[in-house]
Length: 231
Image (cartoon, rainbow, N blue to C red; front, side, top):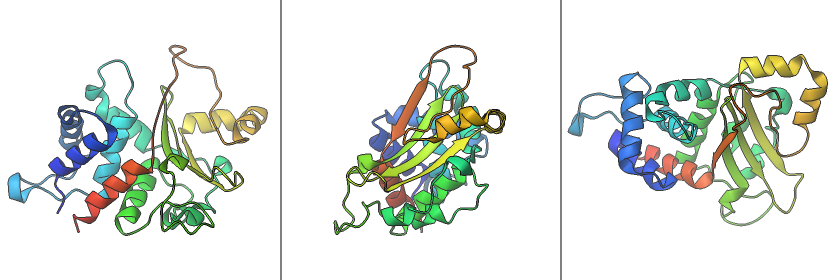
């Protein structure tokens, strides 16, 4: 089985972050019920896809400034509970990219649920690939990304074919507050829904700094492979 320690090591290796830093994030999540735990050593809990999703969210979505690790739980909850915005999401083509589980998610699912399902599906054999090509599962992992925007929590799971640009799939996640703001301004909502780079457009609060982080399919595959060893 895959242990919390192995999850920390895999996450640190994939993201290029010191293990000691990821340990601090993991400890914060474990102490607040956001990571499985049961004993130590051989009795340590087997980590789940949900555990991996929570740790990924906490690390990848954390702000570049401030007490980052201390905010791990708040960051995990703020981004993990973001709901999909159906009017800005195109899910029907995810199966073409080898990721059918993303197309089967319920309409009101959260980012945490999507990443959990994605990691679990990859652990069970799903693999990102470009549509309509016999590449034996090989593709440019840069054609797939999970993006976290801040300080206003926003996220996206995105896949595209760099040759056939109309082949695009994505899931967009916003807070209830941002969704309400867009619904109250149809023109603004129309503007941000068009094109590949969907982004919310509303006045920034607390400063003009915008932060964006993203990962490729390489990290998702590493986490899925690890979780599959947990049984």
